[in-house]
Picture 1: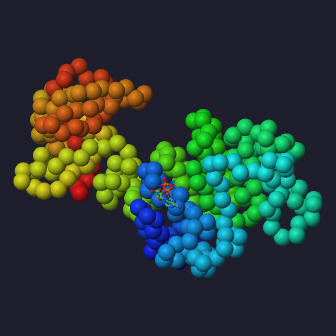
Picture 2: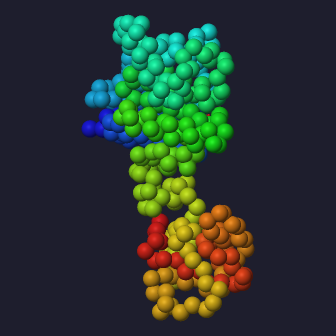
Picture 3: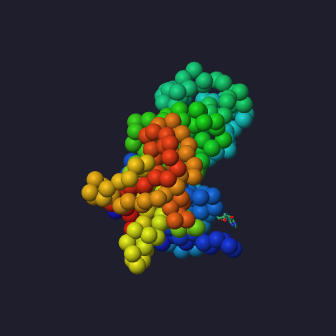
Length: 326
Ligand code: ADP
């Protein structure tokens, strides 16, 4: 049985229904991604106990917590809005939720250790109002961990910060996860962020949990077209465009499609399908290579090229084994 099991969880609002089923192993870092309004925050609120589900169960460490109060769940939370107590200094904020009857020295030792873990040693006596956004977020993280939660929920914790800070803080979160072995659920709208720090990724769409797996699995072997497009760039074409009279849709990634400006022989490209007389519409340099927007019989296609094409009319070759069928 997984450490966290969400089974047939349902929550109905006027114009929205959430229905979720998934499991998370102990010590796993699961990222939850999906378009805005797909139900990510609602799902976290239900797990945290901020909202009550209409039906379904939530089990944590073998215990059914569906009907339990927030404080009985032993779940820590970090949100994008900084919710520190302005009247307390950094150290007091961290010590506030510490469990059990700890001696003063014990609390001090633990909060010093947590400050060092989040890279803020020496900040003990600072007033929280003097902190930058990134520092405040680190203190919030330390405070959530100080309560020794069985699991930590993070809802877009970095979305209010600028790009370089987001990158360094997401690495800090991953390092903290690795050193404590804490089970974490991390909601983000940023696919790159999810791919870079997760053990696995859960994709939500219109209130449903539609796919779950490692970033590589979801990118390489998506089970549906929504997941395919949500996990990265790609092209869909009707199967009939390649295989006459056959129904269905083919999908491929830009890196699996190459172009040739010369005429190509099927013998040289027996592992590929060949789309001849395609027209390059756009060419963007993305640092590593050129991303080409191509028109083939009215269908838009994305391909990659290591060099900048000189001709407009090209052949596109797509590796057969990379084609996904839907
Ligand atoms: P996400 O986090 O993926 O952006 P949310 O979980 O915040 O999505 O919202 C999902 C949907 O649920 C939205 O359409 C939102 O309007 C609706 N919703 C969320 N909370 C409530 C509520 N308390 N009452 C009514 N509708 C709500």
